[in-house]
Image (tube, rainbow, N blue to C red):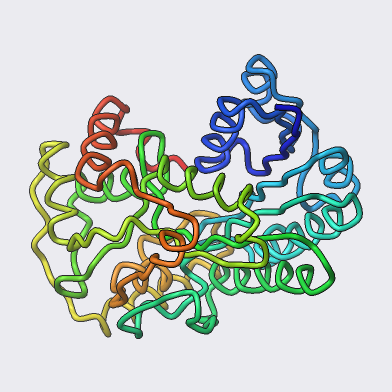
Length: 335
């Protein structure tokens, strides 16, 4: 295969898996990576062409996009805490830079990894691709909406692009979901503020399958797709499985949602007052995400592209927990 693909966010969980998948599929792979990142030498050793830079640097982005047939844009600031300007610069400005360079160099397809956080999954019963975006005054969700709107604007200008909205992405190597929850369960800091809340997840291998379908199928041009494995699991059962795997007590305390969201708001205000870079124990985004009501309708990708979740949820959870217990617990909260 003579095609060249650029992967942004190659040092992250999703991006690193996309790099491996593209190499396995025979693509020439480029990666835009910030100077000093520990992943640079391993990437080069695997045959990846590394371009030093950051999505905030339009010149570096243009150099990285030049000569590429496909661009898989997975770079993002995904935290629920941090300076708003960082979220704007990376999630909005960085995506704008990717779109502009993709237009300039005639990229055959840009795939933008957006987020389920674009939607009001806390209040709605069901979410599909026709559900309107809903800002919620949280840095991550609001800037992912704004960044995704940059892609829609570029599509109107002639860019061949597609958008994917993943739900919680998990698997061995995840630093966002399983390890952070396990750390809170181990320290007996985790409790509930909603009963029988469904958690929507997609296993990393299933997501990379979808990204590659979207990147290569003509009918995906100009389309958006939700990415979820579609197997319901309650938060209670999810926490139970993690607790059993790490040998910790199963969380059982329930507190009212109104109390918890209020506590999160106060914690955020105090941490901002003291300009703390450390994340509060609770944030409004975390509270809302773990009190979702919505089921995820990902049938569009299955019907249009024939996408399948080849790794069932039960197997995906087992693989991830098998990996998690091999990691030093002191590293679980390191993102």
